[in-house]
View (cartoon, rainbow, N blue to C red):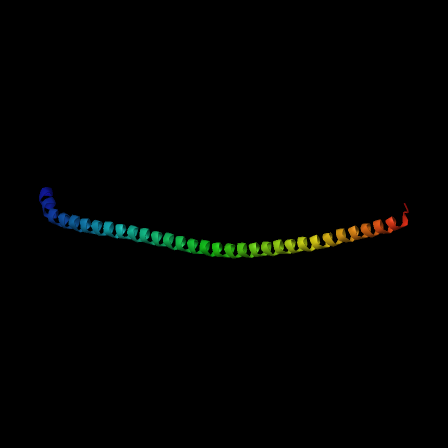
Length: 117
């Protein structure tokens, strides 16, 4: 009797087994789909972060270029002022030397007139 009951249950067990196999395959496909979705999300986030970082680096590069241009402009202005000051100082230096030379010439002439041979 036991064998007979077991034999009667085999079709029912086979149906359950087929159902479980189908359910297992659906779960495997759902799992694989979820993993693929997670991979796609991670790739998208990485791409977005890279794009954002590249945009930030480009903006920083533009800002630094602007600051560098401003610094070069200031350096050029300082060099121009230095050159102008040097030129002005050279003129003043020349005038002082000419004045000292003129005073020396006058002193020589004055002294020469008072020395009698």
